[in-house]
Image 1: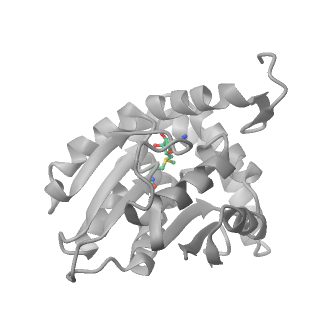
Image 2: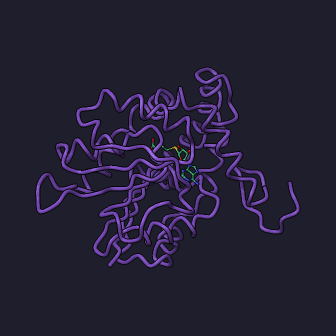
Length: 254
Ligand code: SAM
């Protein structure tokens, strides 16, 4: 670890704040080509239902005076963007922004086969310092991304900045399973199945060990809701999925 006094966690490890992003980037560079397959295997496809629910909640308009411009932050291989443009029947425009060029490369390749490829663009950007104008998006979505960002408060503040007044913030993230029996089964599955499965599919267990640990380190829903409110968002709510294994956080810039 370097000299900095500001530290954070990378999974269970304590690391210098400025070192975390490089470690996270190495994880996603390493798994990018197998990322989508691993998501399906680990979750039995359930992540698709959560992502569908997120986009149903967003409900992008299919027509109107002007189309929505949506920022899908930490959008990786584009799962959320594809759903948004499909839900708007090609009316919405989605910018997929991610810090990782390999995740974006896989997403851009996939997008060639989508129904509305022209409605999606891929931009390399750090959630903490967005290269976009203030008040320039109608909605900001982030799915399973915020947990990986070193300075979450900075990312939330920039999300608030780039949204127009009346804009929607939606964040899908893993949470803390809180149903008896399910939470024990989930903990055992996380420890004994996910990292070994990661080794078989991607050749490396470490990224999936990080996944499990980073989920455990992420703030509980009430605490994360307070962080969203502290960034200036209003009407902050959260909805638990699958016994709180995941949660959808919603808020408005008013
Ligand atoms: N949203 C996609 C999905 O739901 O499938 C991808 C989620 S993936 C678990 C997390 C993504 O967060 C990775 O693509 C990673 O590169 C990205 N990420 C991590 N830190 C970031 C940062 N500071 N700014 C932007 N993206 C970041």
